[in-house]
Image 1 (cartoon, rainbow, N blue to C red):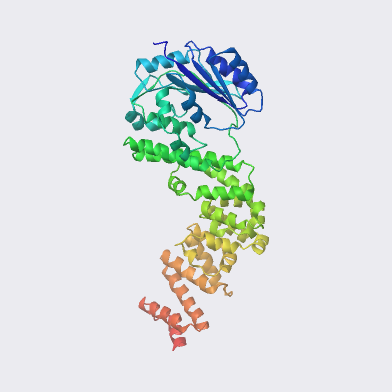
Image 2: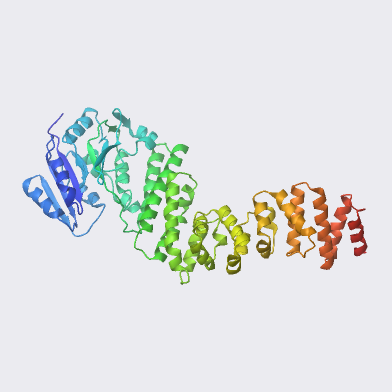
Length: 519
């Protein structure tokens, strides 16, 4: 190994005083000499700057830079400008290295004539103080750029960050980072930057060590929502897709993989949005922008854990903000949001239902899960068993809006029918047509005047036909003919009678009486 190869280390720190000394000590005590250590104080408010100044005064190869604003992508400006080493590596301010990190990384890169050397990672849970292997191969892996692309879903996690990598500094400086920043400015910068570097690599190596220690903090997500984050999600997806396409490796497996990756990006963005301090209407507007995007709709076809997490935080936005916007000038934002995210249940939503949603959490839960079947079942149950709800809320309207097209109940025209015969409707929707037909027959033979008689008889005849119940079918049609005669709808009554005659029922007493009444 050539000890004359110069090394540049870069570290950017923001409010890192608690972990900074461990990080810095792991760098300055490496078994391989360091030529340049660039330290950046990124507008820290704690003692970070003081600690950095202490180390800077102690080691003459340290260059300290301080800024009065926080910028995630600052390294893209600084490294190409001042990095002097043959090789470059980056460390986060709360992480640390094994003592021989540089020695092994340089050796691995040089011995295998690599353009990029990558090591595995040991994770460390800050809350429990437990270590775990986050990423580590069983044996070293040497790949061409094409081979890396072909195996991207399995390997992307290794060079998905700037840290844990050893770069050739000249190559790192060589590409235009404005192209990256035009696509992405917040989420995914490291991955996209490293991918851009890999585009210039002929040979990539991943060793079977885990020389980098990554500190994982509880609730480490920042909830200061940046409106540019969603655009960065898109840029992140497009950059990975472009890389794979350039290597003729964007097959169906990777298409599905990138859908899942993008859904993962979206759920983290939606989590940040849900927990941010934005106003309710701004949260809704941002959520609409995300959910209506064409790429979101494309990847939303993928059923996976990430999609379910996206739904969780989208529902949280609904749960926590609709009530505040109800009765305000921003109700249209709510309606737009619901129409986009809850397409099955949106047609049943009305702001007048909000008190009922508040009282009945399971009803609200069915709504925000867009479970129209459960919501329909519960609405019919409320009608059937709760006279107050039946009086105070337009539950028949909810039922009519939610009834699936093509079912017998979907042909009902008068909403009042659902109030009067909710139990029968529920039987039909549960595919218990025989039981529904028996109940309706009892009502017909009771001699009581029918409510919504045309809808009732149409449903009765439909169920009789579906169940191949000839007697009920004839009886129902005869009752419809009598109804149409009473309503002076003689042409419709004649058509029914003609149909009954064609069926061979022309000589029955009822049909004979109908013929007499129509002549």
